[in-house]
Amino acid sequence: MLKIFFIVSIFVAVCFGSEFAKYLQQYTKHYDQYHNNKALKFQAYKKAYQLALTQYKDDIKKYWDIVEISSAYRWIEYSRNYQNKIILDYKKNELEFQTITKNEKEASYQILKMFDKVANYNLNQVYMNDILEQKISINLDEVLQPPNSDQPFIWDVVSKTDLSILRAFIQHEKFKSYKHNKKFVFVSTLKLPKNFISNKKALYKDQISIESKLLNIPKSWIYAMIDIESYFNTFAIGKNMGFGLMQITPDPIGLEAYYYLKGEKKILDTRYLYIDKNNIELGAVYLSMLYKKTFQQIKNTKSRLYCTIAAYKIGIKQLSQIFAKSTNVKLAIDKINQLRDDQVYRKLLNKLPDFQTKEYFFKVIRKIKFYEKLSNVMVK
Image 1 (cartoon, rainbow, N blue to C red):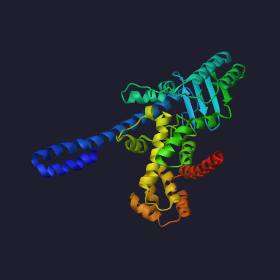
Image 2: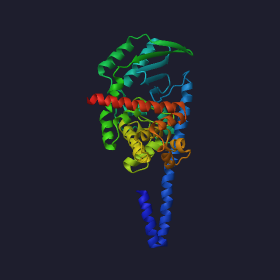
Image 3: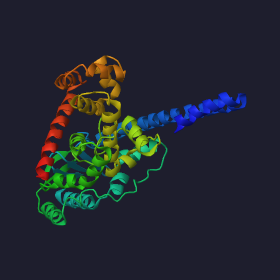
Image 4: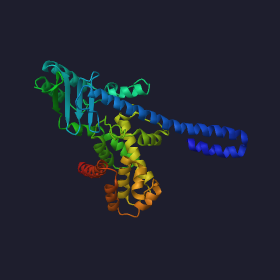
């Protein structure tokens, strides 16, 4: 919209002379400031996040031998005094409680207290208790605000009966323990019900179907990306500042996808990105943008999909460099169109920047095939 107005302004300036030319000069200044402010806002957020992460890790070191923080497949929360720790491991399907205390009686009290909190948690409560988010807000000189969502944490995918069984297990459990300074660390590890992840997937079935129809992209793409990016962990955090189910980075994924949806360039923070509906919507839109817009001129549809997956992870410019040794996307597309899809696949596996990215690319392709087969079986 701004660009259209900018072009119209030029035309009017030519027609009506110097007075409007002054206005146009002023407008151009504001237009540049608008875009520069977005970049500055993201840099400020990035700086605040990185500083908060360092502060958070330093605080953990004071109390625990090993620094553990939330990641793509694990959600980790510490109490304010860092004496208690909760770990929800999506890959292992485990919920673990650790507490630093003097005896098992106190440990039992603390672990049951943590369990009851998690069993009744919603998104707002998790977010407001997140020490990393608290530190980011302080560094930005802002007041931490909740996402304004009552989205459940686990109680919508773990039945009341199963929660009661898990709680009873804690009450009769002999905790593992090890010496820690002058106290002990007591540990309780619970195996979650086998249907925990399948229930999580079922939560998103309707929305993934909606996004698939609206954007005309296969559901298998969205499922596969969520599976590999976060394993259905709402509070996933990636090394490149990707957040939530589809590891949405504030820039470029969040910025570009939100602009497509709302017509506004906006730096989105975790208050927005941890809401599952928002996250899936943005991730699906960005996949569609890459496939149908950025790489539209790639003739082979398999090659186009391979480039879409890789670019989602490493960015458009870095992908272009793999094929054209240049950040020019058009040059890269010309080179890609000279290759068969199996050659594009092999080149990406060979040239992607590191082992983790290569593994990511391979796993997403494999998961797409898995969800395609699963979908066909369900239809039959």
